[in-house]
Image (cartoon, rainbow, N blue to C red):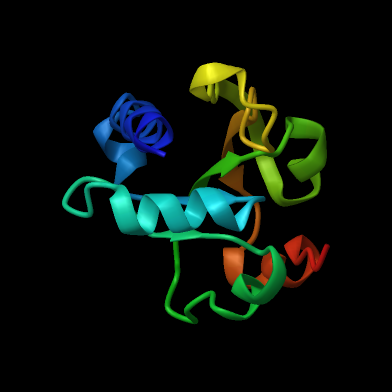
Length: 126
């Protein structure tokens, strides 16, 4: 997972400072969220959350960001919750691993509603 944590850090730090201050990372796959929480540089990365499986219950109520890096979501997947959504990168996993993370889109979303309001529709128990 170091590859993904390095990519996520590079994607996040490439955002303008004003956007980094208002952005958290939302991953469709709890594995990415867990990897970033455990192996990511917590001094650099923002909050990282996933609406998949039991992680769906762990979004803190105080999260009040206005933007999100949506890992594993295409703009069409999150258009309902974004004023604008743009793919800014794709993850690559070494060794041609055919995992959920391979080539996963990373979409920058300017939220149209608080993430706490959108969260129930993002929940994925598969």
